Length: 66
Image 1 (spheres, helix red, strand yellow):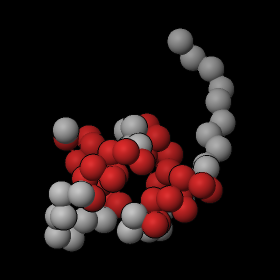
Image 2: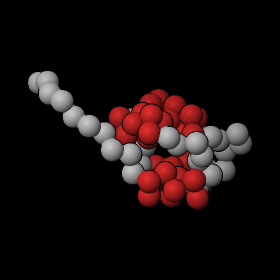
Image 3: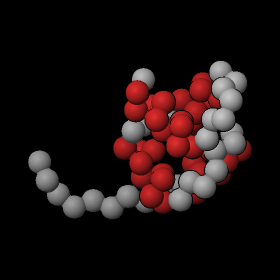
């Protein structure tokens, strides 16, 4: 299947992620997070593990490798 689509970044998603401590989520980063299904629930669950050095890129990596 093929076709044309447009991804629209959600400012609320980026704002909620920032409140969890995940910053610098521009449109491209949010696109990557959408492709890998990095939900707010997933971010909250990973954040609750109290991992050291957790940032947005590591959050995406966790989702890819889980």
